[in-house]
Length: 402
Image (cartoon, rainbow, N blue to C red; front, top):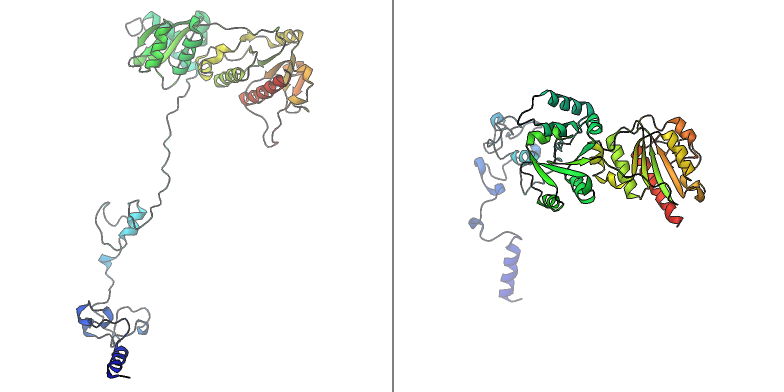
């Protein structure tokens, strides 16, 4: 081996792996600095310290460079310092993340914000509307309470509608339906100051219907809801009776349904499934009740109907016209599809009161009783839901009979 090769091998053996030749040019390591005058070799190993004693030498003295417990510099808890104050860096990052601060180093897990209760248009009951109308009658006539306004206010009650033969249709969709489909019964339309639905205003003008302006307070008194949509149609009471002589038909006999929303839904369902009409028995809420009108979106006039009818007499009348009277019963043994098809060309369903159900005497007058297949965990369905299911099945049966 040559002298040059020997020198190279010797230099390689003397060179420590990973240690730079320029030790004095780099930043000193902690373990080779002489902190507190103690060299790295003289410093006791951490495992040699007595248990429970931190930062002490063997003679009991404390290292100056060791961390010492300082009560004033302890990590602050929430509430130790005024909200928004600056604290030490220690422990603050996690607290900031916990309190929702945005920090790229920590994922922020937020709870779902509480849902604020939305304002729901609650219907005013009939007693409240009657009290309002009676109070207006006692107030002397004035610029804010003229005779024409008092007549409108009377239509918010059942007695006023029967006496005047008029009704009010409230809301954008209702007014649009009445103006577009039933122009002949609309006397006038009243809108609140600043009403901004230009499309609806244009339809009213095209139909040549007089449009009047009300103050916000007047509109509020006419409205049957807590929050008004700002427009009301003033109409004549009118309806079309069902045609009972047709070869095929599906009717609904309504026994004492008193909830306006349910009756409005019955009208919409009947329209949706091509019903031949509805017969409203005595004790059923008026179809011209503003809540029924609104519940049907004004479409109730597209369904032929009669109201304030004696259902016992009418059942006998329908039977003479070839109708099969069908009542729902929890104890029935058959469904609608089990009835022979020749009996279902003309059928009339019996639906009853929300709480008491259909009058038992009317059920006994029925030709057939059926049940709606459902889980035994549920005793009964809402009247409008049951009617919807029966209407769908009846529509399918009528389609198959073609």
